Amino acid sequence: GAGVSQSPSNKVTEKGKDVELRCDPISGHTALYWYRQSLGQGLEFLIYFQGNSAPDKSGLPSDRFSAERTGGSVSTLTIQRTQQEDSAVYLCASSLAQGRSSPLHFGNGTRLTVT
Amino acid sequence: AQTVTQSQPEMSVQEAETVTLSCTYDTSESDYYLFWYKQPPSRQMILVIRQEAYKQQNATENRFSVNFQKAAKSFSLKISDSQLGDAAMYFCAYPQGGSEKLVFGKGTKLTVNP
Image 1 (tube, rainbow over the protein chains, first blue to last red):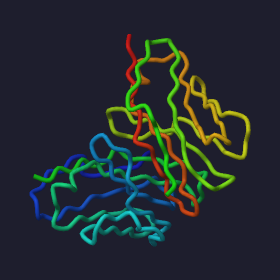
Image 2 (image 1 turned 180 degrees about the vertical axis):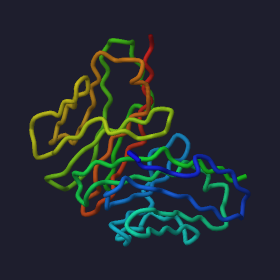
Image 3 (image 1 turned 180 degrees about the horizontal axis):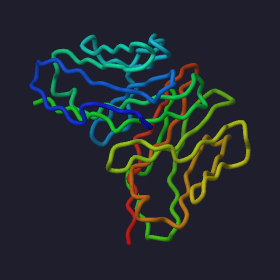
Image 4 (image 1 turned 120 degrees about the horizontal axis):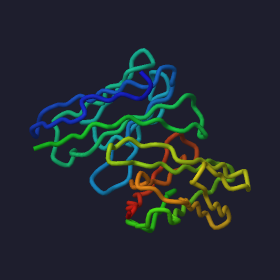
């Protein structure tokens, strides 16, 4: 398991349904990030975990979005009552240590399509 | 608000030629790191190069180098001897002051013509 793993790769859901996106970081990486990338846009920060706690969740767009991390490892991003504007690629990244010099290692993302 | 600006939505270059992608940023900090990431069609973001603002020497990684102008808050990426595999989206990023989150520019789509 060399890299950050995200599942599913693609998810199509109907408006109003709940979805869960999973991220499995690199073993030993204490920091974990979720970003959202809309078509033709840069990356929008959603939330950051250090261990199991989330010191910065300032980027979550609404209370329909939540995330948790358990055991200092796997993280789940949950979107409730999905809307069409939630359609985007959701990227997860991890880094070895807290610190602004540590590069992020990204997964391949989950493409979410809300119909 | 601290921002990162990439003024070139798209760039193209001939194979084996050199291309420079521009990035400017806004920060009030004196020491920080800057990053360039590459995103090929596979969607996975890959670190290309990293620069510490404290160091005056420009970072270099094989064919990739930066032109870091701290006073001008400019952080350009130069790709020498461009290869077809360099075709991708390129994002400039830096950690927002006082936080752990990376702020990204909107990206530059690089096309490499054979």
